[in-house]
Image (spheres, rainbow, N blue to C red):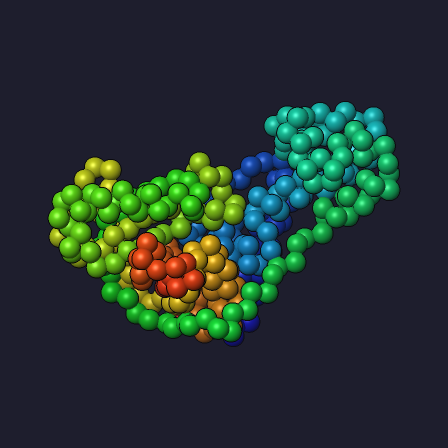
Length: 292
């Protein structure tokens, strides 16, 4: 295998690419795109990145700029009209995106047909996915019994999570639950590389065992249940994105497994306050099932 898994992912993502091409002036949600691909929303954005080498919003932005280059060839067409036709909310946001990508404003580049043609060809060319091979990573497929956690939903960049976990720990210490702590977990619901910080969701989770009540600002959640591929990452937490990309790309394509519904989660195995970052250990769990 697992060519079936790989081809299925390629075919499903290609449906999304065609959908974006047909709706370049719209702003479909990740949920809508996951439905088009028939891939669980828990996994869609990561599968898409491993197949295409870019995020869905990156594909849409590239397609909009490619179409804009084509429309700008008609010099009688106002720039504002082009902006709205390709899905930008204003001429200002269009001009900013265009200048960021090309170094020129739309008005400037349309005066140079060769430069405009080169830009259109550039934006029409999909990214090349990175080959994320990890020969030194420890990987196992294990069965995990369901277990209960106390979870705290946070929004923000990855570097804000230390304080979020700290708040959860302070609550545990104030209630005497800290002595029952059995594990620290995190659920990266969104990919921070594609999601604005203000809405990027992450669940900070503590396992105190069963029969623990959560106050209003926290909630009880369940993790585990079924088979998971588990990858051991050693090093700073900013290296976890590479592990996710490898599992959702190279590993799943070469394995006898396919993704099943449910979130990936991290199990943090040691205290980052007591050891240097190069020795931090994290187990990444992705829910899988044997391919029929």
